[in-house]
Image (cartoon, rainbow, N blue to C red; front, side, top):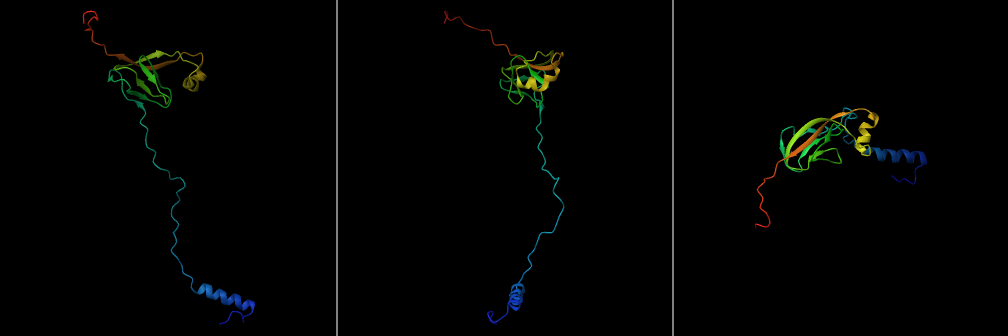
Length: 143
């Protein structure tokens, strides 16, 4: 069959039949359930108190993990950038409830207590009582 001898309408029908004669139907994915609101399981952060009142801790031990300012650092306790309280000395943990005297220049104080200016605020403070050092010393002159 010569395609040059055919008129234009018959040429279109002939080409169309040649194209569709060898068409193959491929497998396609069936529609399933919607996944619009299905999210991944968020792993818990396990924030809170790690070492409570009366526990012995080493220097650098994380005492409290917190997202909001629930607990404050006391004696020999440091305050991390993310709100973590950690021990600066080796010793015993003591938790006390004290009147808060905030440093209004600190960003965490501004964020959580800015609306409470002029009020008396009582909060829990974490303190470390250092273990006493031995008192058996020798004089330098006697050595």
